[in-house]
Image (tube, rainbow, N blue to C red):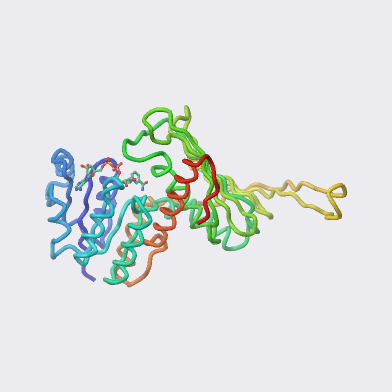
Length: 335
Ligand SMILES: NC(=O)c1ccc[n+]([C@@H]2O[C@H](COP(=O)([O-])OP(=O)(O)OC[C@H]3O[C@@H](n4cnc5c(N)ncnc54)[C@H](O)[C@@H]3O)[C@@H](O)[C@H]2O)c1
């Protein structure tokens, strides 16, 4: 099978990870790299001396020998670059968050569908061993019906100048939540604050699902310590995912609460179950490598990735709802 030829646009903080992982795949080749900043390209050429580089995005977007474009630039540029790529017949791998508005995301999904092209949105965490394991445990019914998903992603910085903490960090948690909870989210409530540059630097998001399941997401650039912990409470088991724990990222607790009488609140008999704890084995493959391999595979074999444009659009809709709720002091916004 011929190699997929990919052009990469953007070689700032995250772009080098995309290029490095593409070089490691034997199913694709990096045909060109674009960054409008010549210093970024110079940095890239030191590592990849034979790489074709350009400061003009148009060179990549219109090159007849490029099959797909990876867009690794700030969010406000995603729509124009992705639209040009799709109009020129190229598949698109685009960073999170997919676009700056849901209208843009809808237009890209429609354009890709019309031109029979694939979109993959870089929701990197969905390809981690931890998230794959959580989804497997939920799908197999090990945890039982879900009560809540509660995710904390806080540390000091990195402050972004063009997006709030919501649009920077919450796409990770919202995409994970969207992937592991199969129900369709119904409403979003968000509160938060901005203390330094006018952008929200801390936010608490609550997402409501049917069947009484709730998700809560805490994102914060003003935390003295780094925390990456998700609690999942369910009827039969409870789970803790600590992404900073190198060896035992996931622990499953056989803990729960049994209510033995429903005869009225005064007769409620509650018993607590406290059993074993186990740490399932989690695949350690670098998520981005697995994700890019899947991108190439989806294009080569006509498959739709689970982190497609529709998944990106669902996350952007929740971010917009969170923004609106935050500006209206926690008003519930229906999705
Ligand atoms: N998946 C993840 O875990 C993850 C992690 C970090 C960043 N990101 C995402 O990656 C994207 C880029 O973030 P970053 O931190 O690398 O930003 P960055 O500002 O460090 O780098 C962006 C680069 O794009 C270049 N650029 C901007 N507009 C351009 C254009 N029109 N043509 C050519 N080059 C252009 C800039 O010169 C810069 O070098 C964002 O969407 C961000 O949310 C994702």
